[in-house]
Length: 419
Image (cartoon, rainbow, N blue to C red; front, side):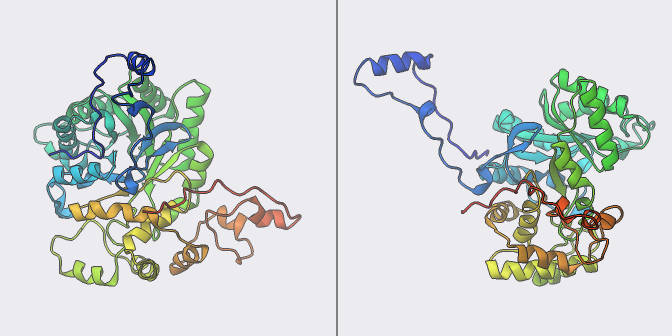
């Protein structure tokens, strides 16, 4: 059963809207249906208030993205067992979610297959925004049948072609909303990559381009080449980012803000490691708990800081962890992996959380973060100013050796909505 967030309007009796208007305004009879001119019904949940994906990609998506690594059971030994995938997808869609992240390789290709089957059964393909990826060796699990694997992985035009061809079949669609380069292989030129990706956009097999797990200098080089040659640039960056893994805050996120790219954090909840004290106890007893990620001391320290705020706000550690990301930059769409329908229903809670500067400082203070050179040299030369994403040129301590300057603040993030 596919439960949609909105009840579709029935067709007007007359094939022409203008005919309806003329016949109605010519008499005292009101229009039988004026849905075209009425305010749309408000979404059932905060997940249904869709946002523009990025300054260079105006497609509208739910503020949280469902992680397709949760769809299927082939990798359950690493990521835990999940409930029925169609039940998870139904629940997400019924709450107003339309943004799903998957990959050619997830769950040994089952993720794409199941998402495609679900969309076909529901008849909702064009309501969804589907992101998938190429680069990973998606045929490696059947090496016995396909012994020569070298061109089913990497960033090459060949790898790109066969992966997209197969993803379209598995997803049962004729276009992909957002295609990522999954990771940089350090073997393919940006010219080959951007020319190949642009050809897919021109063929309308792909609408928007994203890049994942790739150095900032490669992304800027690729986007510069694309813009100089009239090709499609990357509009989205996906990488590991959460309150306990802040590496992206040094170079990647400033690069995204400069390049007009959205930020799509994976492991937004620490790969399931950002937990309350009680959840950590339960995790030790759960034989099906994630084994793909080890629990670090930093995860525990940050979780404790998150839990203090969560207790005060009467919400969960996970809601505070997601709210932290939303408070850092405007175009942030965290990927949330789920195992149960209950997890799906908990997703919108993060969208109403408002964190103060003191809350952000408390999270930052849980574990020391070193942005490394050159950011530490520029913003913390005197070791008296902690680095974070709110810093602007005014805070550049190299400036301060000669003069004090004012600079405009950064574009603020979305404000939380009331439930």
